[in-house]
Amino acid sequence: MLLCIWIGLNDVAGQNTAPVLDAIGDKSVNELESLTFSATASDSDLPEQTLTFSLDAASISAGMNISSAGAFSWTPSESQGGAVYPVTVTVTDNGTGPDNLSDSETINITVAEVNTAPVLGAIGNKNVNEQSTLSFTATATDLDLPAQTLTFSLDAASISAGMSISSAGVFSWTPSESQGGSVYPVTVTVTDNGTGLDNLSDSETINITVAEVNDAPVVGDIAGQTIAEGGTFSTINLDDYVTDPDHADSEMTWTATGQSQLTVTISASRVATITAPSAEWNGSEEITFRATDPGGLFDSDAAVFAMTAENDAPVVGDIAGQTIAEGGTFSTINLDDYVTDPDHADSEMSWTATGQSQLTVTISAGRVATISIPSADWSGS
Image: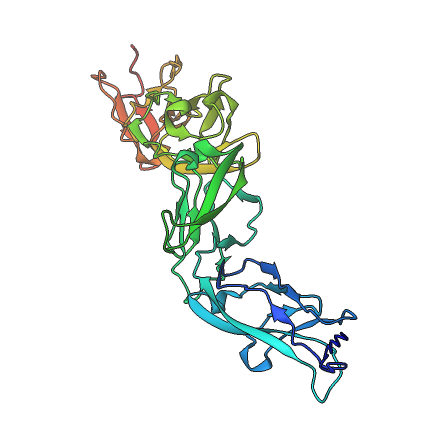
């Protein structure tokens, strides 16, 4: 018996089989962070075909790309946060036939909105003189959209007396006299109002150098003095009238100017003594006292010192007596020659003669005394 078996084979030569894209699934990523994954696929065709990966052009969002080998990469921008982006990944073979075959998957990529820390613009160290104002405006940038409110502040532990900064970043400080000659670190911070467990911030610690500056001394009101002629002016302790934030009283150099007849002596201990030219002097003079510090800065104050006139008695000197022969004539006496008065001229003197009983004394308007005897034969004294 003859058994014939026919085995029939369909002719499938040249038939291309589509590749199969492995499941990718939806993805999530934070804005400004990179999302990467590798797409894979299989193809049963033999000989083995080349599979090429691509993104559907209509589904691509800015920045997305995939390599031909399936490596996907995307870093969403700040403005892309808070949204979902569908994208279609396709794998295509290079089989023969009227068309290459492919497989695709559309995935959704969710981009989370994330708070980005602000960036404080560089401030740098500063210099200022004591009792002068230092001011600057701190600036910062923040990539978050919508734009956040940035608030500036100073670290409480770093604040020196008088420092301040506005919420908008305007810093101001006028160091006091006592703060001169030192360096003051201070921390400037900018903070956003972003969402999340904590607002984010950025800080910079700067050093502010405060230079010591010489301040002029201040001379207070030195009281004038008025005394009677022949009196003595009170001494003046000049230390009582000067203040200087930088120097001790003992470092002050004092001078006195303006006097022409009064004499001013200033001792090593800065006590001023004012002396009249004579016991009979009267009048007034304005004296300016000036204090100069070691740095050459100075201040001054003027005061009037006066002596009021007092009427001093005239002093009559020794008028010589005369002895002449009977019948003779006494010499006249020019009384101006015998009187001194610190307050009045000779012409202001009024003269009188007393004590005579027989002799006659006549004093002329020119203050000349004439002595006459009662008769030519008179004798006596």
